[in-house]
Amino acid sequence: MCEAQIMFKNPKKQTNIKNIQFMSHKFYMQRCFDLARKGEGNVAPNPMVGAVIVHNGRIIGEGFHKRYGQAHAEVNAVASVQQTDRHLLSKSTIYVSLEPCCVYGNTPPCTNLILEHNIPHVVISYIDKSLGDNGKSVQLLRERGVKVTTAILEQEGKALSEIRDTYTQQRRPRIFLKYATSANGFIAKKGEQVWLSNSFSKRLVHKWRSEIDAILVGTNTLKIDNPRLTNRLYFGGQPLRIVLDRKLESTDSFYIYNDLYKSLIVTAQTSVNHVKKQVLQLDFDENLLPKLLDFLYEKKVSSLLVEGGASTLQHFIDKNLWDEARVIRSKKMIQDDGIPAPQLLAELSYSQKIDNDELLIYRNVA
Image (cartoon, rainbow, N blue to C red; front, top):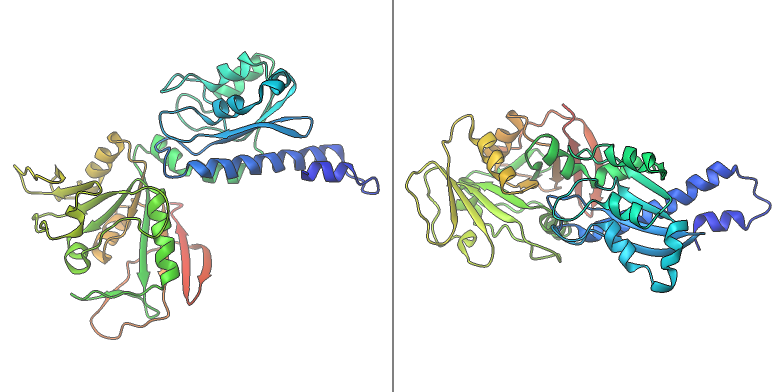
């Protein structure tokens, strides 16, 4: 039973009808968010989107965007409606976590679907900031007589679309920095592999890897840690593995050269034709990162997790090429030959305990 129904059945509770309606909208929109997240890791560079169709307080259809290039959430929601309920579409409300599209892409516009089935009311959380939409669908639907309600749990809807917004507006992947620090502010020891975070934090990092398109490290991290850069502790997909290897010092003995998952070697060396992995030749100058991000944008890589060492991370920070930093602070100490953690000048946005570790989230609002 939904929250709105419970409120109506309590005659002693005096509640403004508009507030009841708003609570109902929030209830169904939250379901849209839950559905949307089921597409995580599979829909990039499209956003995660969920949709719910409601008639007189009963959900008659729901769906989410499952995979890039396939049907959108609204299409799957309509398709899920039982044949015996199809006639109710023209008397129903469709809730969508993101403004329906009104342009032709890999699939037809979802606004056409809404109009075709005469759905009279559309409730939206967040307006799609993509160039072809950005409020145009709302305007189109209203011009055709459809009631449109917007900004329901807008901040939650925006969070689902942040990767897409960065990709379309800044024409680059959304960049997440990730690193662990000791209790006294060091990221590693010189020339030595050090494991700072606990097993729970490690599993969380693998979850992050399942959610993003690509992961990047520098040559020093590769040579010292020989990381796999894969998701092994969580269900879901595998990111593209990127190594900044200026002199092409990496060899086939490193894990990234296995044939199980894709890797990209970025180097300054010319005339390189690696038999196992894709190689991108770029000058390692001040334009290295912008050119790499341009390349990733063209390849439809919409999110990038930087797990490099202090030097690689600081390079992204100095270029102001980051959107969110995820720092795991350990209780462990590094006393000798410690490498200082990157200098991140940003206010703390969120923190959470992970057993004896602490997760610190910083967001770039510059």
